[in-house]
Image (cartoon, rainbow, N blue to C red; front, side, top):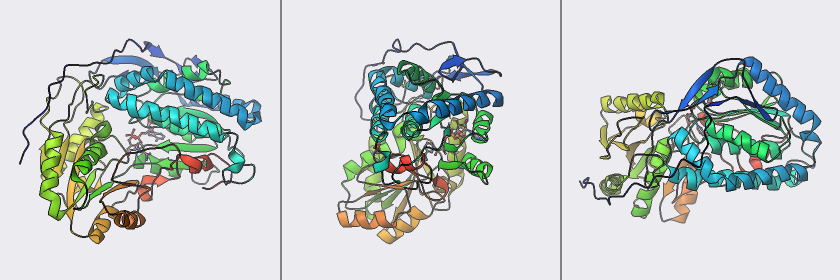
Length: 484
Ligand code: NAD
């Protein structure tokens, strides 16, 4: 087995953080300005160094109420009265500003989240601008979206997002909501609030009418107060399945419209006729992109048995070249794990993999002395009954299983409580179509993985949630009576 590290030595190439002005403390962004909260505060740190980046306000239920009232007033008095073409102008303005300030946002995102700068710079921020441009284009064409002749907004949207793609998830939530004519109160995750707070400055720069976008910070109780607020018309949540279920229970029996984007345990299926070098890149990108903190990560690799040895050897050889370290270094492939809690979860489930008899192999990386890190890891000899084949690890850990026939691959791929995404690697177009029609997953990628486009709907089956984000479908989630 070739596992020896053959790699170039790269000189450090750190991106300067001078472009970002991080304030020592932040208030809540309500009604167009930063205000003090009524409760306490908490610190946000860099997961790569454990350095405290800023002090952030913990919004109380009273603060949530103030923010929802501001959003309601903005909806009634301004936003719902504007024609779509006027809303579009604001969205285009925001899109342009996000493109102009993307380097600043990318650096801040990598600092607060721990993701490599080449991902925040080349994936997250470009997609953020694309999302705003795309939905800006819809704002004056809602009557042509196939959702009725004159679809109406819902009102105030309460939006709660996770820490893995903080500014991207914000864009996925805010762009369609505003395009459809709603106002929003958004809560970023407690470990990654800084890019959302910088986005508040973008709203000011774009001269968005006060109250159309409100950003409140805090942890679970703040999110709960927001989704349970009686004057919220729409709840949009991305996060864990456990919290998603709690939210579904709390809004049951109310008139609130809900979309839930939850967890996943995607199968990435490699057939023996696949272009293997390309598939290896897809496997690596599928699970190690963003440290595996990806709901649609290809965390279960299904390899056809007759190419298993070859695939594993190539995969280990490729993994040995991955560079782990400073998220701001432009050479870095694998950044920091987002928090001590997430690192503990990854370690715990990996230990379960050992205990259940799977075989662990980790890429030979040096782990920095400070911060939260986990080397890219694969488990072989995994069976469907293993917890590491069933539960979302949400880290750089791949579980490898094998199959002999397409029917067996389908059985195994669908044997999960989730259904967010899947990947198929084969040179046969007919096999791609046949697999895609049988895989119970919201997105099926063929000979690629983790590709996103604002025009393409994204969402899950089963415990991966309900509703779709992106595309025309994503508009329906923010309009009365519409279903895409
Ligand atoms: P989480 O559910 O713990 O937290 C997500 C957000 O919900 C945070 O902002 C948190 O403060 C808030 N929250 C916590 N408890 C709440 C409550 N009771 N009521 C309202 N809000 C509450 O999830 P996480 O650990 O931050 O994120 C990781 C999870 O998100 C993974 O399971 C991942 O698969 C999922 N995810 C899904 C998608 C998708 O599109 N399907 C995208 C990204 C992440």
